[in-house]
Amino acid sequence: MASRDPYLARVNRALKELGCSVAIEVSPSGKRLRLRGSLPMPDGSWKQQRISTTIPYPAGMEQARKLAEELGRDMERHRLELDPFPFERWLGDARKSSGDGSGEINGIEAVRLTEVWWARQRRRGTSAAISWATDYASPLKPLLSVEHVDIKVLTALVQAKEIGSRSRRRASIAAVAVAKAMEMDPAAIQQLKEFGKGYSPQKDAAPRELPCESEILNVIDALPAEWQWVAGVCATYGTRPHEALMKAEVLPNGLVAIKGGNTGARQGLPLPKAWIERWDLEHKRLPTINLNRDHRTVGAQLGVALRRHGAPFLPYDLRHAWAVRAIHTPQISPSLAAKSLGHSLLVHTSLYQRWFDSSSMASIVSSL
Image 1: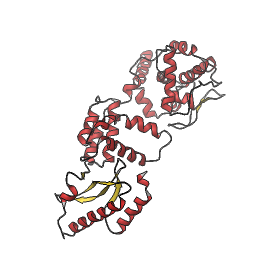
Image 2: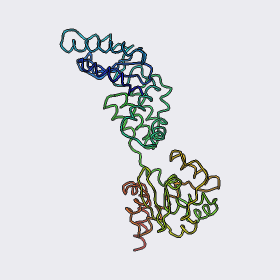
Image 3: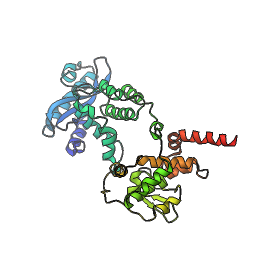
Image 4: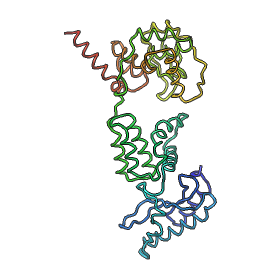
């Protein structure tokens, strides 16, 4: 990657040792060099700026170094009040790439710059590629045809989604990443965050009727043996589809062991325990599909199998149905149910609040 270019790093180190407060970096396109530094503004303030050039990377490194030294000298002479700063030369429309995201950065470059910025934020696991594709690249697709990316464009990207929806929240998170990568004003970034508020996972958790026990039994009983094991684990233990396919093992004591994953290793309770014997879950059977893919792609295969066999419910309905059965099982506390499902108590109660309320009301009525 250009950001790891040792020669570029040495050039910037030499500029710093020389006392020059300008750095050289590669443009998001990876084809040109540009300058970066805190420049004086016409209003008397100083502001971080990126100055685009036509100097090619990597062939024009020496030319860019000389240009950086010239800019550094102009900045220093202005700071010492020896000469006025030549604003037209350095901040003219043809060169300007300002910190508020205006200027010559187009949508393709903005997305590339964001991906580089995103990858630097923290260490990521093997699911980084799918996380970028789903949570950032997908909501940022409309930017790819935009000529100039600024705060107005990012605002429109978020506001195009329904207020309070999951897609709007995701667009907001992605737009904030772009704004940070382009070093936009903090107030603009905060505004993009505000636009994404209002979403609650509770809206997606139980808006539909969940399958009753007889529906679950009829569908899973009719599945081929290998898919019966996968669906049976999801129904009996409330596992996520990809966990059943990639990480689950039913133990001799009746618990299921989930070996790692996004939420860490855990064990889960069978509910009801009779389903272990019904579908012979102690003997693991997997379909002949490629499991060496990201968890979303692998997990989606259970949905394909259920549709193929006419199931009137989705794979995650089995997980939701387990959670609802747990609510109506006095021996299983909300905290224990949350641990079994592999999420926090806060997430558990917010997801299934509707069902908790219903269970509480039913208990009160029965005691009257």
